[in-house]
Image (cartoon, one colour):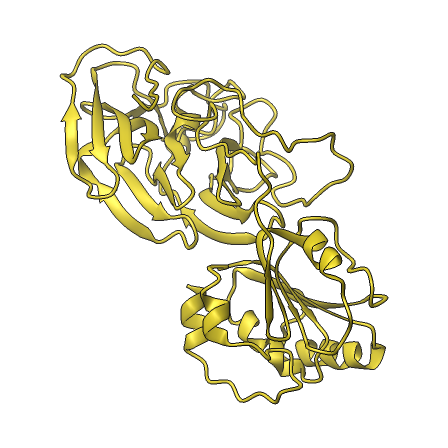
Length: 370
């Protein structure tokens, strides 16, 4: 976590250096990754603390070209240029689109930026330190969150965000740029968003051929800057050769967030894991949700549809000719057998109740706050 990075390093800085703020206070902002911008400093090594945290992308901006050259030389000597870069600006308008920067640090007296300009580039929940002064950008009223495949646990499929406007530019772009196949299952199984982060289940296997092995990952990015925050490997997932592009109906319902946590299965036939949304660290594993196929979260409770035997069955669909079938020994949804609904307290992990096993129609479970 970022707090360990800040607090685990001893700093000896002069008053003129960029980090003229209390690092305990920076750590307490809760910003664990994203785009960090440093405006003006005489010491290139002052950005080293941020470089120790892999979930930050850093850019140093200044009006003075010799200082930029010195920073760039320092980064190249340390083999750090890439995650950290430099850019020159006019001292008035920062070179970023609106709502992009998560952490902005301005050396006191280096430039004179108006608060309106700082708030323009800050992402909601973003923090700026101008010398010893702290500035926080609030989340705009009416901002919605898409916590389930169909918006929320009700499955209504319609959001409540009132801040949306016609797009005027691209905010950010990330890999993979292309899915692995036009004829087989989608390379993105699920996407949800809350708390300024986007979570997705993505196949990062080689795009050269769908016949090459999959590499399924749970990926967390900052929703405003697109910076990669963390990844968790998924040990097994649905057969990639499934012939329908959208994939089985249940897969998008295996990923849920409440903003503070992410709930998913890290194995096609495994139990539900509760992960820290900021770091990806496993906080709990709900063992009574083995063979989970669908997940809902409402009022601090996890509602899971679980297969009573196995969520997976051998994939028996179309295979390429001329290849050993052992190369494609993957799993598909087990259509046979019974299911049960299990309700778990997300805080304690205690199972509250469950139904008797029986026949079940996919996508029929929904929940409101009653």
